[in-house]
View 1 (tube, rainbow, N blue to C red):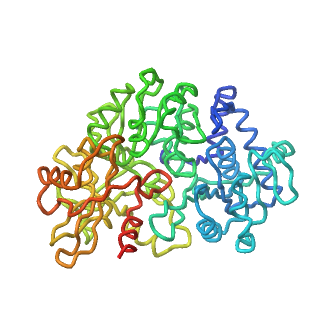
View 2: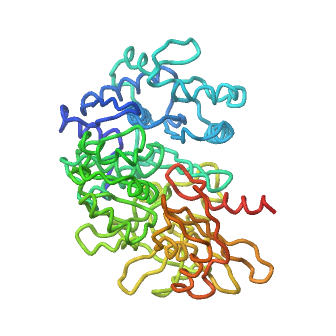
View 3: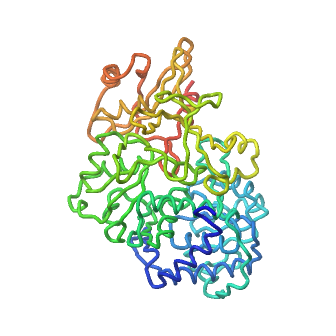
Length: 521
């Protein structure tokens, strides 16, 4: 038996409720600054009621339920209620367009949609195109409508009978998270009970979460980060959750203090946003001891963030498909936050070339993660056998990301395989150029792409966002790069922009930058 055993989300929650019935499980602040809490017992009772209500609506094991919600307690309740009855949660980005939602709802074969009043209009024009949807439930809805079900009313009228619930197993799929949309057709990543349990065990032990910790969640719950690393580590440890409806750069530490958050999780973009705000010395006095983060930030930004807010930053690497974090900096060892760390507990990681052979130390190769589908890595892509076979090969998950291993044994992210630039026969990692550009004090953020070039295969084009109140010319930045990069890595052109197209968690959508270049021609 492995660390997961025969446990499920249902049995895990039951265990923690029996241990901490009156302990606060979640403290929530909505967009208006209003706060409320739920104890483990109160949360569990809502989960049982909703599970019964969903079964009364004829939701069966294996049915897909689309969630189109901002962060709120209802989201968490739905997630665990759906898992209790063996159905499958399909969380989606509230900023997704009608066309994007049309695709996800139909591809996932969802039979139920749960959203909020302000998003209903998005779906009403496509009801004829999503025939599998049987009902629409609205959370935080104050009115009654014959066509829409009221979430609160369902809870008030439902029973807490547990005898009706079907048997569930660790291998059951309980979540399906669609990839972030850097391709035209996102893929549905199937996540099992065992996957959630595994990442909870892994993360709680890797960052030493205890029952006294409160995971501070400001990233969207529809994304794997908030689910895998924060919610599950809190539940496995018997800790609690501090949840905000929206991320606020200026109020991040004030919300952490008000809600009692002790461990945060961010991406590079939110970290830069916090640093860009006017510094409030009162934010130094905050309860956060650690912030996990993904995606690279400049060395001076790492130092500034840690010093200004008196905490540790911990750089790590993972993706929706890996479920857990296969690479992470050691909490109690030497943290090298310009790296993505070393292999974590339970994972084996190697770098491979185009033929699948392991590369030597110092040589760039694709990150491959060894795992068990449906337990330590995703089960598969839903209705996409070809993509599953490309990603899962001989017990290894091929991530599509390039890295190198330094002489120190740490892994250093290089770039997405598809983002490597081919210039005059040389491979150029866009991130290496971006790293140099962000060393310039006038540069807030940069994105580098390859553009077609008749002479050199590809030319290097950089897009740059400047810090407020600072200026620099294209020629000055190119000279700055010439002093720090090999000649073939220096950008051929630099364009100054106000922002980049991004995914919901702040990743730059480089395919859209490439498209913008193509459209100009």
